[in-house]
Length: 154
Image: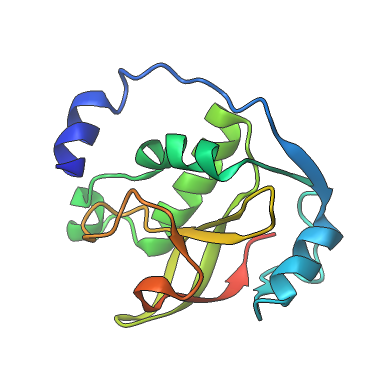
């Protein structure tokens, strides 16, 4: 179902940026994630100074547009980190929400990359951006689907 939606609507849906964002510093973002046991990938090289967090309802609204067909993965062209980075970039460029980030960590299939975000309540949400997974296109809570993020690109 999701794959067919993506094929039909990937480039046709109007892009409506999120406007109700809350800005936090990178330091505050990392302190919050440290509470989940997640460390920055680039601890010695700061990336964004500020991150803009969306409400959970807005994350839900854009979720389908941060998921991509599994074809490139199956063909060996793109791997899981590429899917997570694409979701991070599309969220920032199209929806003005740079609070969606690449996560790396443990899953039942081994070490993996995916997308994650803090919402405005600073709750951690995760998104599998590869449509080849049955739970792709829906944000799930920390630990669900046995995804345990260890690092974040922040």
